[in-house]
Length: 205
Ligand SMILES: [Zn+2]
Image (cartoon, protein in one colour):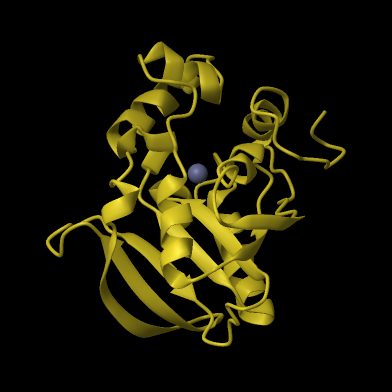
């Protein structure tokens, strides 16, 4: 799903006022006609010479737009927007829907889940990897913006590992744990036990 990190270009930039405050918003893509550019939301008070709070969020239309309870993506995005407005920083919205398999295949995977497969096995059953997301585009965008040190809002060790052997240092992890719901507790349990996410809520064992 990578858009060839080295050739990502700032295609357009504008201010967007939101429920949580104003973000300087930049679209990054290789070419201007790309209909699915990565989106970068920046709190205008962000100081790039200091450690920058960063949320790398992979697109989840069902969660982010339709408030699905099958995952906690929408709530994580909302929580990140609030945090970044209160504390400065950057949200990078990566276009890798459904752990990188796209919305159509994600719906196929949800259908598999209805038949009893968990979130990881459903993707495998469809012939994909357990998680096909990559984060080098996010690292490239942060480099382009001039960020040197980050405090990452994440529970995902893969996102921290993505900065290994790069010029950007992860100096802190900020937990982004959402209270489980009945509809997503199995999903969160798989995230914790299978994918190794740092989830410490007592309901997820
Ligand atoms: Zn989601």
